[in-house]
Amino acid sequence: MISARTGKILILAILALGLAAAAPAQGKDLHQAMKEMAADIKAKHQAAGRDATKPPSQPLGSTKTVRFVLPMKAGQGSDSVNEYCMGYTLNCVARVKDPYNTYSGKVSTSEGGQVVFSGKKSGEPLEMTLPTSFFGDTTFSLFMRAQDAPFPEKAQVELTCSY
Image (cartoon, rainbow, N blue to C red; front, side, top):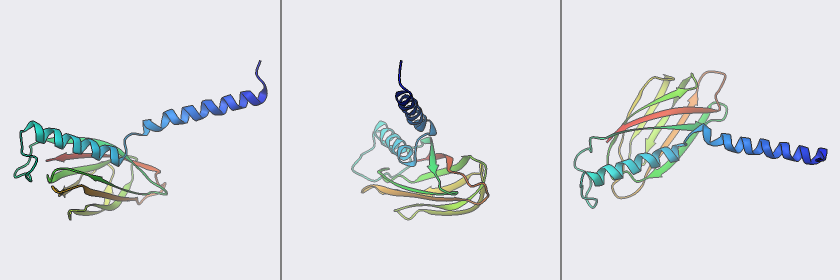
């Protein structure tokens, strides 16, 4: 027989394990999604037999879709990530999949790509051209704000890029 104190500790431990197991179910973050995109670019570049010592002269003709969760606090979220995308220009379409709201914000890269958006409803496409650096990592930055209450604590985003 266990004591009441031991029983409470066991319940807390089970709850903690349950919360820890539930955390990955929220999905990838921007860092994991862009790492996956960069790995795909590198693999397709190598498979095409292209010279890794020279900037790309033409697109690869490939498309990749990644999904990620942007954590938000009171309806606002931001994140940035550095990834090496070999100098390819990413022609992308982003959509907030969930929750339903109207969003505004900005997407930018350290290579000069920038898209400012306002009044985009969930599911509506946001088209953007994101240049990347051949000489090193490119910083991808995202700021997003929900305009309608109740303000979400996260947004699920789908990003499809051609390169």
